[in-house]
Image (cartoon, rainbow, N blue to C red; front, side, top):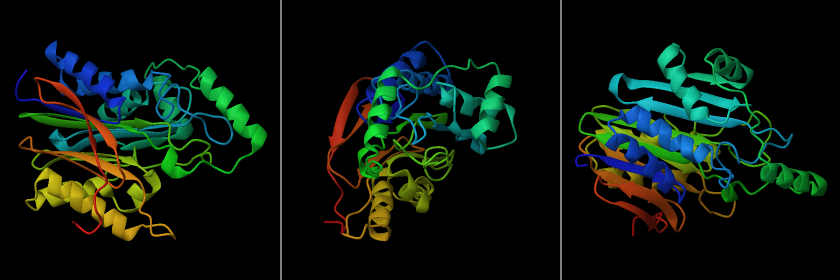
Length: 294
């Protein structure tokens, strides 16, 4: 296929892109392809930061966050702290297509999923359950937020459309009800038909505090390339939110401009992402961005 670009976060993003590209080859819409690609990661129990297989909160419950956005018409839908449903991106899409609301949370999101006919299933995998039981016995301090933040985020671009989505189980052993950047439009993802789209992964609390993806799209709107916009947004986060030792939070962002121009940037070393240009799928890795532009 020509005139198509797909990208997704992390090594497991390769699976998402493979599934999505296959759907496009079969003639599916970009939204269907995006949903199918992210579903593949949500159902992969070897991935411990997304969907079924994701690690639970402190109380032992898996709470899932997801969002989807269609640049045409500026449409979006999201769910947060969703329990009992393994494919939160599909529920988020239904929110976008059925409701006037942008975001449903907790039991309200679960009730909506039931009404829409989604199957209620166990979301705590055996392996995740064992890890939680071991953690509960030791009562170790909460995990370092920089060690468990692997959201699956994907953008699909064609000359006619841009769609973006992301899904995560969030920080392991998080406080119940904690919501990161992934289901927040403007933080974990953003899209504008005339400008482009961005999707983020990393420390969701810090990404949310600077509205990272909205910032990337705004910079592209000002005339920057996707790469320039990603770099500027990541440097903004690094400058605004270092920890007490001056270390910036972990964050990475992917972006595709409305003309198909691509960019990626990260605040930490060896961030992997998948990229398919319609001819070849590549798994790439980038180094940490210098905070001073050198």
